[in-house]
Length: 101
Image 1: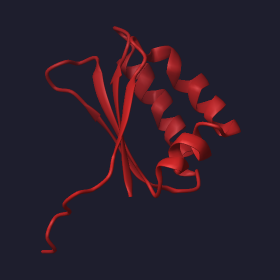
Image 2 (image 1 turned 180 degrees about the vertical axis):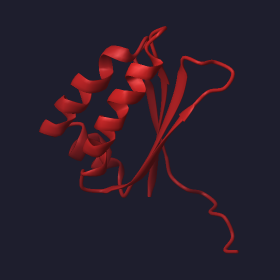
Image 3 (image 1 turned 90 degrees about the vertical axis):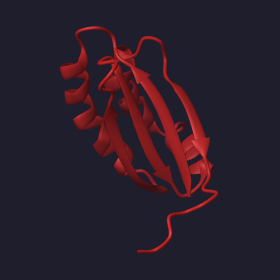
Image 4 (image 1 turned 90 degrees about the horizontal axis):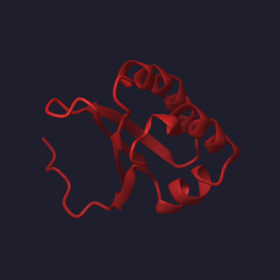
């Protein structure tokens, strides 16, 4: 499993429009091969900041399967105009998992 972490800074006054667009865009990412789950978090201290966490089976599922797909163009059209600056995206692999309850 690979965890994609994207730090998103939204243009001032665009939070509601961004969240509305993301509600549509999340259907795109959730339909991609290798997608496992995602969540979008809103920062309490900096209202223009969000974090997007996406779990993929492999790094290639994100970097090639999603980013090089036709559906990625729809994702870009819905979301990319909200960002200032453009997001930093990094990927992590698990080192330690929670112990079973």
